[in-house]
Image (cartoon, rainbow, N blue to C red; front, side):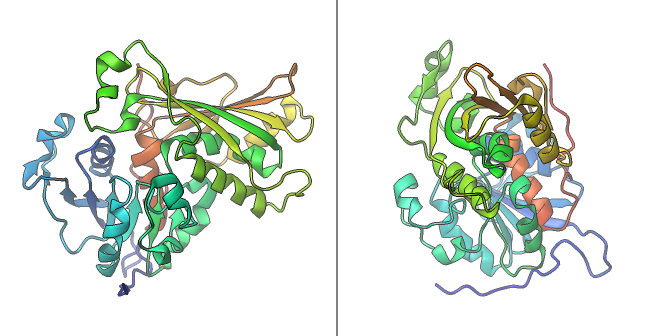
Length: 372
């Protein structure tokens, strides 16, 4: 299938040089992530939220689906208007890749919150997601939407004819941000990730295993032997080690990740505890300097002295990172916490959207965490 290109050069600036309003649509506005997109974009200073769609919905008020958004004068329709500048897609895997060509023909930038544009190699999709990628040509153009890793590539899409962002998964976001300074320094010899997520990470669809009586007062490991998010964690760690030109003798470039996620009885939040055997002896002082330098200028990443809790970042686009050395074993513990629906999904997608449209990266995301 050929794709007609509609130029979106300088998509963030109007002819007068002033930041312009961006007409935004959301496909999949009825789920938890879709609701968070609406909540955040409705107050974004540069966004006109012009279209919401949801499966089996047409002219349905947003408040009928998301009660907390009932004060917004927005309806969910069957189709988006034609003149959208950007489209956020919060859909099951496989759906976004089918819709992308039509949206590109209309000149829209695409921010996909599913997995369809996260992985670089189309051969990884049958293994990890069970489908053949229908448009590997578009996959080659997509940018992995973790701004702390790919800020320059996302910003370059301002002048690109086609802009596709594959927003990261929730687990990879917390995990990669916790590990990035170690990977850049070639310090990861062996890696085990023990991660925990609230129930909202499984989506809004009714399932027996997510009923209150099943989840309450229980912790369950799942994805044993190969959770799908391992693919993007290994992909991004390999890219870091390759880009930094590390000595292959000290670090092979491909870091195998032992990853075990758990479902715990809370609504939202992710904690990723990364246990690292380093490639060489290291001190706590060196770790502290490494992480302070890595994140000193990041607007949404804070390095903290004590182990953080998921409640520290609830409803915000912030990540808190803690790193410590176990002097007895010589292992490094790196912990990342996030709100899985904001920095792990909707908020991070908006952060990438801002870069793609030449807007301030923090626009619409200034909310502080909510407590208690």
